[in-house]
Image (cartoon, rainbow, N blue to C red):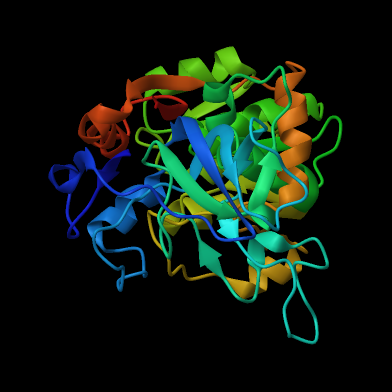
Length: 348
């Protein structure tokens, strides 16, 4: 099969488009013929060797997100057939474990205690084919295009988990959404709008903020021009603050976002590329009765719900640019530049 392979850690120059042996499936596995691939900033970290997963067996195929149809099924597979339209689930598990409390059995298969990850601990989606077990598949609605599906799992399922399942955003609430130009940020604007919230979006460029307004943001803040997000939010809310912040930046942006919350405010986070270790004023935290929660992607149940909403047109993935698989280096260069709005995807 054709695949984009790395033989050592590094930048986009280490991504090689070449022929490599197609994975052989076991009795409980399926082989997916991928039609589209979604790119994520996490891919850059794994490629560069800074993700924390440093003992990859080389050669390795990156990619945790994709969509396609089943080309082959193992003898023990009962739930799927050749031709089914599916997505591989990026956090892989067996569905059951020997732990006294099994997270997968409780519906939290995104934080399986026996953690494994597509594109990291096993070959991923930067290829014509990917092998996964039947427990780690998500069915696609018939009306959902492959490119839209490939732009959905990380960005929209994570955004739904943050906004709806974790922060419990309600009609009429004020919601601050950081990194509004990112895949998750742009998705969170749509999800919060669907929930009936008033949205304040932040980003580092006026161009991204204009797109955020087009997506449904009511007010915007350029955090490269505004020294204090909290002060700007207080001006916009008459000194009250926002009910909820959807945060994925970290560092001083996280600190300012906590300060921007109203009494009983909630902050929901899924990232920290601008600073993973953050000093907090715990006196202010408990005096304001702040609730802080987080998610690591989203469980299969959330993915299924969001894919249905995308298929119905209630949510619409924002695709910044689509590349052919052979142009993965150019796609990674765009991903690293952050000079785009929405999601970078590839056609296989």
